Amino acid sequence: MIRRSRSWGVVALSILTACVLPARDVEDYEGKAVSSAEAAASHVGTAILTAEAVDRDGLQAPIVAVILGDAEVGAVSVRDTFASIQPPDPPSDALRVELLPLLDEVAASLAELRIAARRDDHDEVVRLAAPLQELAD
Image (tube, rainbow, N blue to C red; front, top):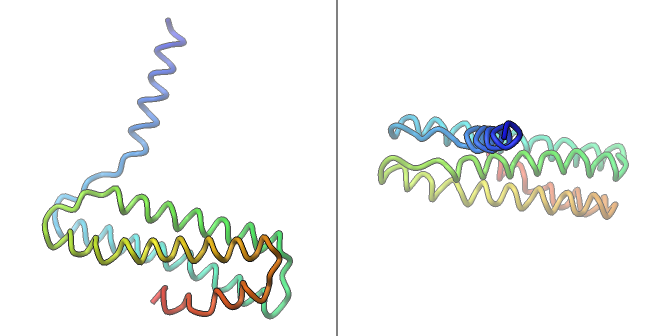
């Protein structure tokens, strides 16, 4: 009986920690959007620096793949977290419609970079990273 109640406690705790607090008003939602955009830009920055190191130093594929994989996971987490926040009003809906496609594009771009790195295609990593600064901006 104790084992079963512990299991339910672990499940309940997992569900609670996976929840994102709702945005109370438009300012709170905008703050969450800004934080999400900044976090995504940081992951893009990591990918840009990594691609520069690939181009300049010939960084080895396993290292590059791990770094870009971590950046991708971070970007996907940012996207999923922001997507889970309930917009409090119609102006927030518009912000959501504007930001989510950008976060999707970041995640997809970093996935393409990771794939190229795992294939040990340095030229493709450099090519795919070229437009990332514009996306980060």
